[in-house]
Image (cartoon, rainbow, N blue to C red; front, side, top):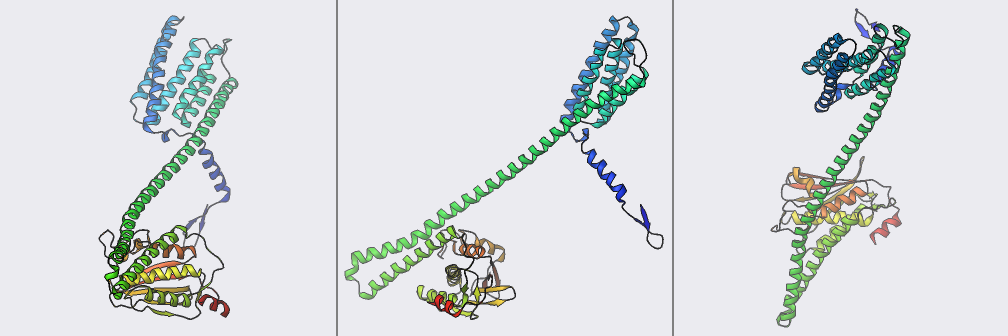
Length: 454
């Protein structure tokens, strides 16, 4: 249907009355086998089978004609069957070749009925032929068979009583072939549905196998990194603790009090380092649960982390904190403490000598934000995402000069993700900043704030 919209322009319009029949025809077409969908190798061996059967019919029917009462009918057998076999063998089009072979076998059926004087048993040859040409899985050969049987029985067939067949009998025979074709189509359809399901399952299994292989490869990589980094990071503090202990054991009485105190502090420092490593690894392994009612005052936790960081690292300078008072976020207090402690520890490790890390925070229209910044080396942002993967460091290897096993930032991301937040890294003007976004919470009651600060 066409509508006209100003200045003679034709605008096509869809008609519901025409669209529904079109959809019905399209849906029905999916039930018809189409030989063109067969793979070339699959179609080729089927065609060879049918051509071989057609070739075998030529000498057999010629011998029947020769031994019968009309030897002159040999030519009526050899000429049409031979011509159709030649077309089926040399034609370039797949459909032409399949139709020629199918027509040859149908003609062989007609000749069989004719040579046996139309006896009822000879008609079974048609049913076998229709089943055989079904190998092409093409609706055109079914249509050819139905039309051939209708015309052949209505025009030139002879009944067993010697009378010419009428069109009613021809229609009956054609209906029988139609019924057989319908059954074969149903079998084809069921087989196609099963084949598609098998291909889908095979694709899913292949994708699942590839995913498992990728996960296994990633697990092997993490395991190798874990072995390498843990063996280095745990051996170093243990060696320091052992050396200090042996010195105190063998030469403790000869050391002055300041030297003994320094060795004891060294033991404590290495012990603290081991504790941080173990704590991060344990948190990374079990950071899956979340308390939906958890609300924490960010200002109090940031001040606490800054104080402990300055006191826990020998020679470490102060940590500056600028967080809006009363900023509350939906996160467990211990989880937020671990997040900020890892970020501040990372800033102290990788910041420039004498630089003061800055912890800032507040609330905006997007929620609660907390940043930890340090002045130091310029960070390659293309590799920044790798820092949040387990057992990954930019300066990886056993010869690196900074401690850590690459778990701290991974723990940060795990904890923040669990509470519905996000982590981002940016580097500009000589500063590296890690920004944590958390879900906001209503301000805590004063008594709750006092409990958190205790």
